[in-house]
Amino acid sequence: MKLPFKVTAVSPSDPAQVGDTNFLAHCTGANRSMAFDELLPGIGQAVERFVLPYIGPEIYNALCNYFDAPTDETEDKDTALRLLQHTVAYYTAYHVMPERNGFISSMGMVQNTPQGGSVPMPQWAYKELRWNVLENADSYLDLLLAHLEKMVAEGVPFFDTWKDSETYKVTGSAYFRQTSDMERYLNTQGSRRAFLSLIKYFREVEEELIAPILCTDLSEELAEQLAENDLSEENKALLPYIRKAVANLGLLAAIPHHRLVIDGDGFRVVSQTDQFDERRNQTNPVHAKAIADLSQTAERKGNKALSDLQNLLNAN
Image (cartoon, rainbow, N blue to C red; front, side, top):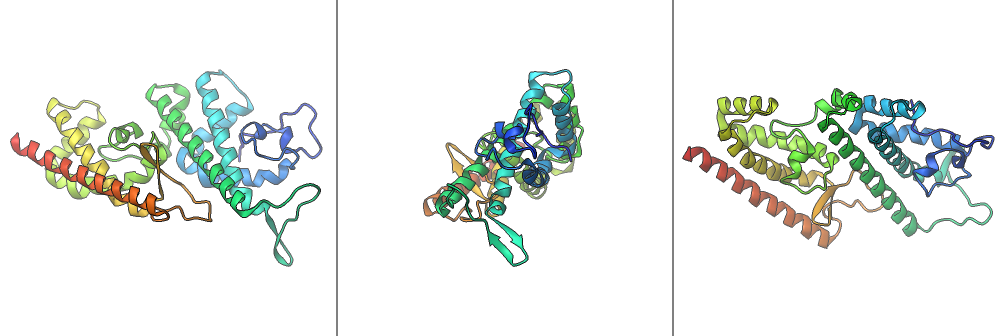
């Protein structure tokens, strides 16, 4: 597997250390004296587990090739590569942290003991650090996905690799193709990860609630016009009601199955946990109340949009 990190020092140690590579430029908390070979398995595993499911191997390999041999350098490519490196570095740190505290021996699992001036990290500090590392990883993945979507929207040829990939094409529903379509109705802070995790529930609402209201002919007409980006004036009037209903009722259906964190004036879908607190919707009473309010608001808005859609159809 290609990796977005390599030895960059003019006179590296033997064996090479993390400080001899560009990994340290993307995860500043890493120990520069750690042998780079010890970190390599964790990097590859983090890519496979956390990154490839969202961006796919095509654009990942294209960016790694660009890293190895930059050609036709542009700011757009450099930004994508930098965000990929940030993302992989922090997911690697999250992935390897538990394993660096212990290892498997002939006697089973044993704990590493500190040498020299090091002392074991208190559990509360370890817990907080791992959560912060995960938040950084998720945030950089969201920034990377947002940049890739922007490049596709602007028609930048290098990113056709992603636009043409199965990872990009299989996502979406009848009425939501891009993260920006959803963001008009749900404030997920531009997160494509949230979009991908919610889209299954959007499809269910479209099939079970929207299709029976529109009936076959109008459903097919809308789908065709949306695909061709050529909506009639009448269907332009319908689309906001449909999307508002689908987004809110889809969110309502998804909430029990997701790890949500209320953040600012919106919410985030958390990909994993720190494996101490579950950090699900019911973990904290105050947070659980906020999630309950979010559910009630989604249900109210979704049902109103359905009613408004039916009224608009009846009136015309």
